[in-house]
Image (cartoon, rainbow, N blue to C red; front, side, top):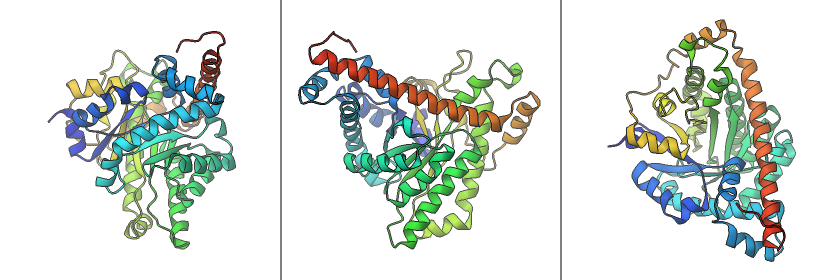
Length: 365
């Protein structure tokens, strides 16, 4: 049993944090499912930008769609939907075998809507209807302005991956929105089984403080944040409010660890995967980290349900001058800005592709 199989055996799902036409057409994604226990995947504008910018897998399709009059956002959305619906079909047997708990893929709403709740609700519903896949999440950022969009989308029956969460407080706000959406569905006589995950970003914490802390605290903040969030997650699942919904047929909103690739070259490349081993959670993993973990990763225990040493470690960071609450807000804001920039870059690539394929100046991706 390799390390990925051991994580799966303890109750953690492994999802690939990547999507490209090359992964699908080469059979690589299928091999990861078979050999490395991958049971889902996530995507975003940055990942998709890299996929079409750095390969030629999309050239023929872009040429055909451009000839048919597609361009800009419409063109790129069709490319993303083609990839993600193929991936969703690949994971559908897992989705069905786990009664909807696993086997998901994710498609994001435009990051430009991060502070537009009404626009987010509309786009989430449109994307979900267009994809026509039971195992496709719509990603909504967990910004303060988006909390109402999470609740309304869940109430509308749209499966949601809440992304860009950086703290227990942000996670609990997203979880409360999910619970309200499910409670409203039950009150309205609707099926309470609507999938959702809440994605906590890990490594960006350590990148943000790496030049501001004692060496003894290096690469420990993200893990402490995760442990504190896991405690909040376990407490929520044990609370009477959730048990009532579970008894009515609702699915738990699972906690997902995102940004799990090690950014510090001096740290082990499997650092976060090993520290974040926890039942009833998901780790979404960059491809290089997946391969490293399958090769030499170790599973030596599971995260403590009470958060372990999280509070002591966070106290040490506070003594070193790190304001975790303020930093969580900053990281969330910067994350939204980064995703918006990636979306703008993706639009630039799309425009260049369309221009090239219509006979304009050449553009190689």
